[in-house]
Length: 175
Image 1 (cartoon, helix red, strand yellow):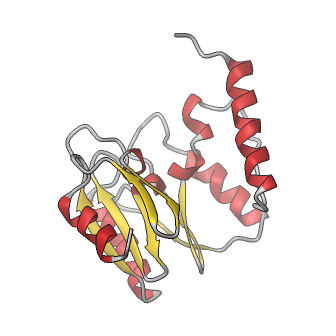
Image 2 (image 1 turned 30 degrees about the vertical axis):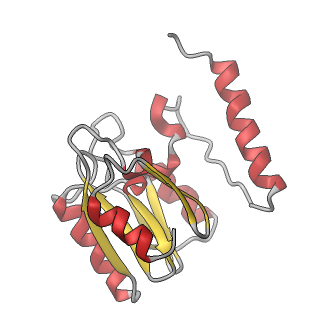
């Protein structure tokens, strides 16, 4: 169905309001040009660490360049950029998720390739953080589509599609 822009904006504003009520500071990015349809998915464009942001390099040609707008906004907020994925690497932030303060699960698939995952894992290793890499099933766009951490010991997942290694990592950490 065609996009209902008013409804999408109301839903976005509702999510932002819920975060604010929970004490989360919400920052927005106002693009310089007409935003692309997927630009609302900022989680794809960077991944936060305690030392700063790892800037994505989108695999999708339709998203290419959006990471520059995210980098400008992060810089304006004073958020350090600790790495920008480069070369043959592609990485999108929705393929990485913190399991605990010392472990990140990192999905490799359509939007994060081996080279991108290796660059992210190296940055995390320098921080003393282990990157548990799991392969995503064929045609799965992002790790976030099959795994959500909703509390300190509660995850919502699709165990038949999340790699065995990922499910085991959750169980080992008490999820």
